[in-house]
Image (cartoon, rainbow, N blue to C red; front, side, top):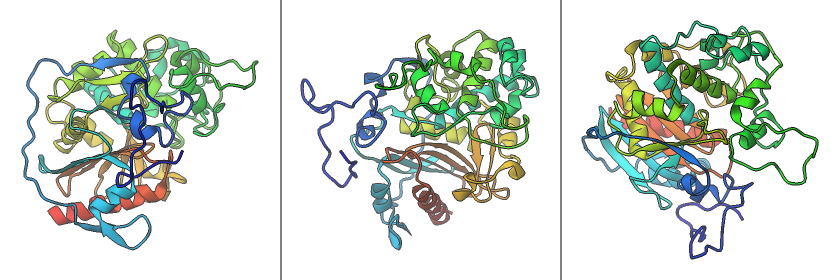
Length: 401
């Protein structure tokens, strides 16, 4: 089956009793199944709650503006409206805040304000936000070797890497991020995290990692010296998460609840997918509602908002642009990467949290704007979708300024 846009008829995935169209275990994150599954992870995978606590919800003022007709670049070339672009890019939820107030909020494809949506690699940025709080409390030291927290890493390629290297994906550890290869390192992470079963009909002698920490301990090759360059390695965020757990004696879901979700006044409890030993998938397993992702962006716009140290936010906006190169420059030609966030350029120092299949938090201080787009693209990566979305965000920012 092919995927469908919001303007097209939705197939009856997981409808009926029992449902006739059930996402296959090997393909639940692929089209068209991801259009349902990204909003229903708890029906597919084990999860751990990130409790919002019993405190007050941070209210969001509303100064709504109808941006549906705003003219932006189209995926197909030429011009379209913002509403048209959101349809073209398989959007599930979209929200824009200007100076802390909601000016535009839209839901599609069955999503509601209370629906938790899988964030993919936006989870990395959420995890790093909680790590920043721990750094501020003196529980983590970014200049310490990761072996300070996890001595077992002395027997891996992470020996000699600093926590900052892991935060910036600048360790020299070899990790193959080929999403379409089940035997790549990221393919093995699908299995070790519990997202996918062992591929049927594969090599019976291949030894699959039983859980994520076992996979981390099996990484023994270096591709370059630690700190030499940025290279996207999802497993780095798992290393960060395990360091956070060792430093606090808590599981990651509890850390994010205690240090981020409760203090920021989240509207809904969130969740992480967990592996066979209960470890949260720090690099991609986080699920939350649209407005709570926006509240995370607001903390950064407000230079920490009294929750994250202002120094952490400032450090996150100052990446090493010389370490940033192809293929990442296709969508961010002036970009950099720091503390699990993508920096747009060295002038605005705007930030993106980005995840495959079209997840995004955007923070722009010049516009006073936060935007969140949750999607279920047909493709893991689509640089053209990313570029036209980024252009649309700037069009919105200019319009609101």
